[in-house]
Image 1 (tube, helix red, strand yellow):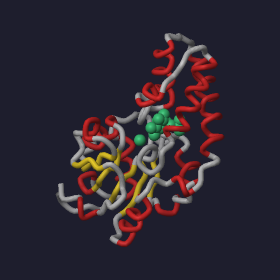
Image 2 (spheres, rainbow, N blue to C red):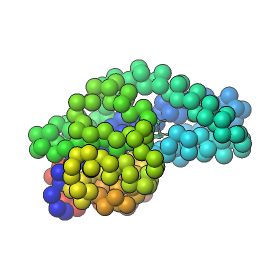
Image 3 (cartoon, protein in one colour):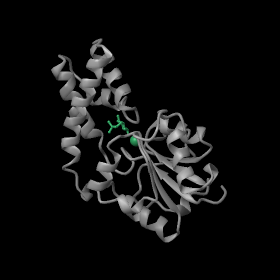
Image 4 (cartoon, rainbow, N blue to C red):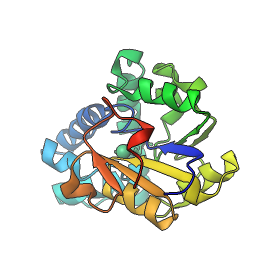
Length: 215
Ligand code: BG6
Ligand code: MG
């Protein structure tokens, strides 16, 4: 591996576990529409955009709706979700993440966010992590969802580093593919069964260090 100048982090499932709040909010919507939505179903929504998530949910329930109604339902789900994330505190930062950020700062390696979420800034503020980031690219800045590399390439561009000098940290398969499509290195956070295309896969950040990045 060549020189590493920047690390680009996915947010949901990498820095914080928001999947449980997404789950509560999607399940509540599904129940209102008259069908159930399981935690296993929720796995299919990880890394997927809000509108695509709604399409998957409606497919599970066998429900067809017009575009206007879908926009209203997505908005309703988001309002419910935001109520949960506004109660989040720095205690919810996943173990080891802050130590790793501090290591990057000490080594003068830049930190960026590359997330599909339109709520990313709210979450970073709640977690009191905003100041760590040299650049933030989220769902409000991109038009192409992962596995398109747009979100990560924009991050590299904002930082002024070339893609090959970046390492992406991702918990979703589409995110790992986005990193590869952007010619970036990738660390999978989770299970090798799902994230096998990443350069390495680790269960989380506890004990993780830049010294492990000798791909
Ligand atoms: C991703 C999550 O980071 O963001 C998805 O993994 C979520 O589950 C997507 O659907 C969009 O999030 P938001 O906050 O804009 O609804
Ligand atoms: Mg994720």
